Image (cartoon, rainbow over all chains, first blue to last red; front, top):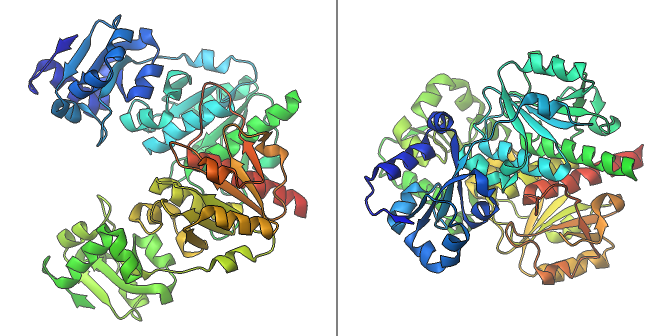
Length: 265
Length: 265
């Protein structure tokens, strides 16, 4: 373990830059996870560095022992850790993780895939919630258009509650082209749309299926919606104009999960 | 319209206090809504004051005309509005609304009610999302325990997207007592619980039903869960330990909505 006491130390400055700059995280191929739970769940071979605060080290000396194989283990004073942290009340531990790259080919070639396709979904909390609830619902992969929130944004990471380690995902430049490929492979594409023809619970998602979810403010672009096999809507009572994107996605994912359980019997 | 140019004006200071202090909002019996959409949707007889920025007034002079019956209409310089606003990029209009009080008796005596019972739900975004998705799913009322987020917190208000104007809700001191009353009235209480006996989609929510949703970190307290008629679980795949409280609530509410549509045929 290396103890750093200066806020102007080069490694501290580097970490601050990783916390703030999506582009720099991408260049370095790393991202940050924070908190005891997220760090304990982290796949050990994907951990690059571990940072702890003095208080954390004092309270959890076993943590350093457990992770002693991670060679780059830093301890810093609490006030420096506070600056490195993305939360107001940090638990005092964070990991620098190696980013993962998934091949779209691998994501598509599973049997009966259940995919979420996110078109310009900008809210980090929504993206994170879709990964977390998606894993629980049996989603097999997430496809994100350029213009979606950075999945390695600390807010996304936090709201995945660990699903970031397990859910395959890929960013694609040309979403319509990818959707054509999905269709060629027999994966049905369902666009969640306020003017959808059928209620979502009237379709079957037991075979390979993909749900297209649009931007929070504007919904799916017409170009992307036009690529879908069918537009589905979630019937809404009251005077609600639309659901939050993560809520709509959750309703669809768990309907698919329900149908797939029924199918198995 | 009254134009105020000083940040130390008593009315400006009063508004800042309303923005920051839940207790003061409660004492005054008012709350704040912000943004064009939320203000346009606001029931006119519940509006106490309207505040606009100079830029907003310049760009939307029709707004002042439309709401001229609201006597207390204030215009302030943009930099003062920024301080009054709860958002980083304010649209430049907010309303001071009168709080509503719903009687629990009225909430309970509807035919086949669909109720959400929130036990120590602390995240404002979760409470707001449950109101919004709940209205869409046909929820007829929300019961909140002491210890839930303040429903008049600006973050809750924003995430309701207007459902705050329409969804009946009530805070109760003694949740177990209220749950006993629900049962006396034949309303079935379902506790969302990780160790639930039955999968949520194996129960019927067509008759009067109430879903009990627990705290984000700790779930339902044993005392409250013990009041339920039955504990239900949402089957989860992967290594997910639990769903976000709003996601779990959304799954349950839309299963109830689905069943109730089927029932009508």
